[in-house]
Length: 462
Image (cartoon, rainbow, N blue to C red):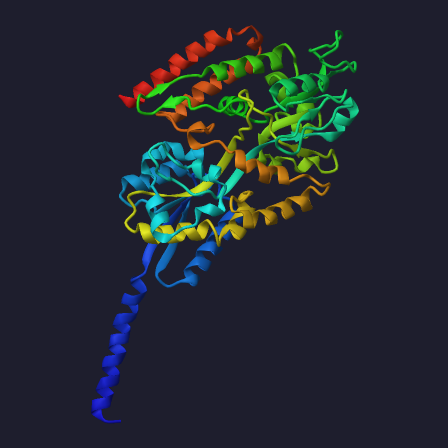
């Protein structure tokens, strides 16, 4: 070989050594933070890491990195440390509505990126998209996992009482034992729930000899619901004026609170805290005990009914109509959010789009998530059918999505000082369901709660 060609090969080789690292480093790095919601157990970590590998292998312009808060560290502390240190992640999730409220001023409006990329929002029911829209038109998220509220019911208890099951289609009436058709609303629920509430002597709550101190079966509850979810089930409302920084407990929620107080302490068809915590009623998981006829609760509650297999069979009905006579479905929802100060929003949106679509078959099962995208819902249903194999009407869940409440009426919609307002409402709930709840002056207590809440948001606003 001539010296000329030898030098050519040497120069080319050196250029290759120089260019290769530069090319490798030219990828845009996007960081995905996991921990503010689910995602930190071993099975989830394995799948999330695989999703990262598959995304990186699918293209050569973006390098996706993942930062998973370990189970023994405070994810909020780690996240705020990253923000304060000037190294924020680009994408956060999955995280629920309530879990994202603490950082509400950090989330990016993705509507401009939806518009510029032609991202197709029409695959979702519009009501699910509206959950993430703000009053000024920003879109702070795109649907991923959705858990609409359902009326879980125990058919055997209805059969024993000679009652028809809750309707499984929206707009269908409830059929009373005498054949009368009545609206499926909370008035009807109260009427049949009293029949389904039974004491140790076999008397139901409509009978003169009924003994409320020895109840062995209840008619209904709002399984594991916080007060705002119960209020929202009975009538969704927008209770916080962000511009004025004012909280108002609506009249409909006062009516709902009186309805609940009667149900617990006068009509006795909802268990109080003492009954609910008892071993006889599942130590806090009353519906799973098989001794509660109905539970209005979100779809994720299927997670906690594994012990029903071989014990009792349950099914789904639609939620009752709210006080205004319309259907309103309170939906828990998790998604991934982008940070508005990210350095590479277009690349981050590419990753976000992948997590919301191609990664759904991998991520949804380990998150226990019912996918918002219709094309992935049947896989979730098939998995649940294999677990609960007696023919549950899963279509109720699918149909419920069309009735989802918008973001300003969501049961976890944001307020200033969200954590403290949530704690204050829960303290009221505890008082209502505990001994002495029967004697509460509901309106006076709610006046005091409203004043407390107003002071909390004013303190934050100042």
